[in-house]
Image (cartoon, rainbow, N blue to C red; front, side):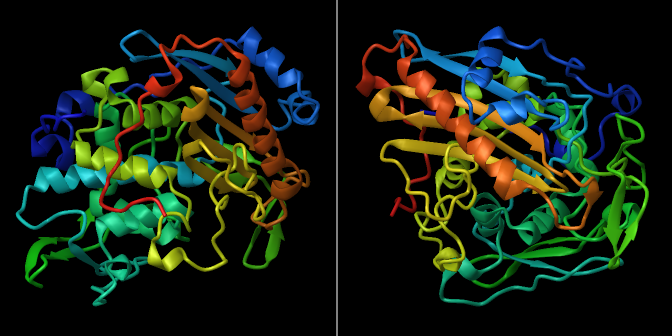
Length: 434
């Protein structure tokens, strides 16, 4: 069972890095590209459903990471990574993948503030102080699911990838502290510098005033508006994509510029998910400083589907079980969850890029593995026009990929003492799976 980790001094999370670190941050801690794994290459070419994309991997900008997990006689997991076309210098828009580290760092910040009553359930209000900012006032409701709080924002992010919830936590953590903390954790290639809103680069450097109330309705913390006065820089230089893009209802016939967009390589976010699910498998310096309850909370909502979570706002038919499960289920509205299979994941979907980073486990079959993939499906080369091949190519490919690797895992020998001994990840028990 996880124990509470020693938290870092507040200045390291909330303040700036020491001056000696500011100019010395490398562009990336990752190698430019990883060698292709013969095993993964052969697996990808062994399924006819995958071949149309795999045979044109460069055109689809396909990247895949498959991590085998084997357990020893003490039931400790051991990881073997296989890669296909993984390249941290090949930009893809991470979209909602950035929600995973933002959620973890919001929980870290609550602990760092160390204010009685300031928990993930404390009511939260966001004001405005600069252009492009929007307000999210205190909400009074007998239904705790409907109040604005760090915990509910994380649920909304992880259950249905809610963008406004991400914006609120981006603003709470702050642009510069968010990135500097990721650099401290060993992710210097990360750049999370944008809200999911049409804000310019300067506006994204300004974050809102925020207040919290305790259970008695008393204001317990007020965070003033903040500004990141120093540009973070963009490690890949100028990045453009496509032949045209749509804006304001008309087409601009030049490539879309991603230079100042968010940046999070596939290997980076895969390691982040691993650090949340298996913190003891990464070095202590690379672990998020979270409590056992924090880890359990994140795991629970990474796994839950909207309906199964019991979360009040997502009981409608708009949100179906496979809404955020691309690998294996392909986001099919009619997909039925298979007994025993649990998927802990975060997804990204934007500008023709479709990505899923997942840990898939079936305790009944002693199967567990991590699988991450991203591909680009935009045949006409026009961005922001809403015309992408998500349904015809993206989702079906990811579904087939998850199913194919799962079936391979069923046949692969695993060094597990007994099927029943596979350790279940500790989760938050405050809300039972329904």
